[in-house]
Each structure stands twice: as C-alpha cells, then as structure tokens.
Length: 331
Image 1 (cartoon, rainbow, N blue to C red):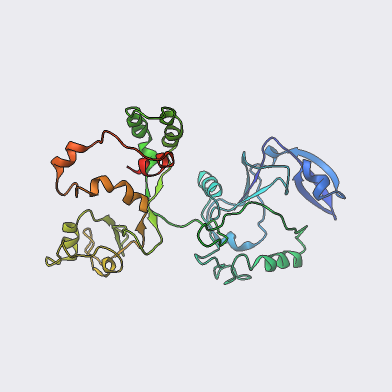
Image 2 (cartoon, one colour):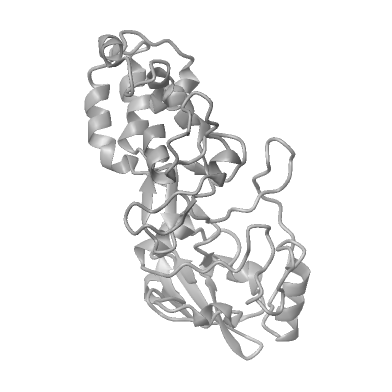
C-alpha cells in the first residue's frame, strides 16, 4: 500500500533497456551494473510521489494509498533501497499505514490462502504461490531479477512450522493510558536488585503497549463480551448479570460451567435493544488469568472484601527475574 525510502540517502535514476529505474545509488553497481546513470536524487525528493502497484487488486480500496514515504528503518546496503509497506503483514507496516491514514488491505485469509478477490492466485497458499507470482511478473515483462536469500524468519516453537505475520482483529486493554500510574506506583516499590526498578521493569512500563487480551484458541477463560446484530457490545461482570440477561433464574452458580462450549449455548438478549447476541469467539490471554490470581483466590469483589483489603497490596513478592515483565507485570 506504500513504498518507503531513506530520506537522506542518494538514489539513482538509471536507464536500463530503455526504461528509467530508481534504486539506491549504493546498489547500482550491484543490481544494475550495465545501466546508465541519468541522475542522482535524494530520498526526500521521492517522498509524496504516487506509484502504480504491480497488481491492481488494492485499487478498489477507498482511501489514500500507493505513495512514497520516508522511514528510518530503510537500508541501502541490499535489495533496492526501497521497502514495500503492507499493513496486514508486519507491526511496523501496520503502524506506519495507521499514521498515514492508509486503509487496511489484507489479500490473505486466516488459513494463509489468497482470498477470491485475488483472481490470479485465489485459493493458493501464499508460499506455494511464490513461483506463480514470479511467472506472472515475468510474463508482463516487469520482473528485473529473482533470487534466493538467507535471512532470519519466525518459526513456531512447538511444531517448527514457518509463521506468517498476520493482522487480525483483537480485543485490547489500553495500557498506554495507564503508563503514568504504572510509573507512579513503581516508584513506591523497593526492588532487589535495585537496578530493576528503573531498568528492566521501569523501562518496560514507561513504554507499556496496549495489551492484546483475546486469543483465538479453544481452551481458556472465555472472553465475557457479547455483541448483537445492531453492533451493540457489552461485557458480563458476574453470574448474576448472566442470569438476568439469559432470563433463567434456575442457573445455579455452584454448577454452571462458564467454559466453551457451554457458555456459547446460552442465549442472551442485548440489554440495549433486546436483540439476540453472540459471544465474541475468543478466550482470554492466560497471563490475565495469572494476574488475577490474587483477586480470584478471595473471590473478590463478590465476597471477602474485608479480608482482601487487609492483605492488599501485598508486602513482599519473590519471583525469577524473567517474571518482572511477566507475572509481576500482570499483577
């Protein structure tokens, strides 16, 4: 959806086979040794210019797109010195497109296959489609060079399957709005070793990211958020609330099973409009469960409030250093 260049780098306009190509000047002799240099410009001279994408599939997406920006992470020591930005396939890409109000475009489904709108490659697994994409570019005579490179790549730590960075909808806790309070409360804690206070833990909470709470799994604590056909959304905070919205006074708090699939079999009415609702199909991050342990052991805030208030906040916590950004943080 965007192209990124290095603002202060030199870029060469090169005549090659009667076409003018743009590449980082430091890479001209490597990539286009037979090309004739026409002009040298700065990356900033390219910023704001529009371009035509290799395939037309994103053209139908409304909003500003297909223009050149500058980005500090662009390198000019390999490739072309120009980086393609795809919001659905990388955190940096997503954030950049968000900053520039570029719309989301995701041509791949959750199984890793191209969606039907990508006519040439629809239904194909993205890695299986690599050769077909290269063939299509070559057929249109817009492929300059193809090669194989060795680079770092993420793999599943359980099954060693190669992973695909993929933007998906999720529910977040807006931790970024709590940073000041986190830092303020951290100042009241006596750490041992002392350097963790301003170091490993302090640096972490100063840049606290919004917490992706939901997980696309089966086992776990179901996310207690429902939505109706009119897009009203609401959270359930207790079994009593659940009983009221289900309309079943016979629900027994002692025997009710709040896990999947039973929780999804309960039919709730929207408290705002009365329409039928569906629970959001997620479970909660297990770290949220861990962070709730101190509250849950007292069944707080539903009972034992006096007992809880007597012990909170705790006087002493001991944990391995790795948990400063894990369990201790989620507490």
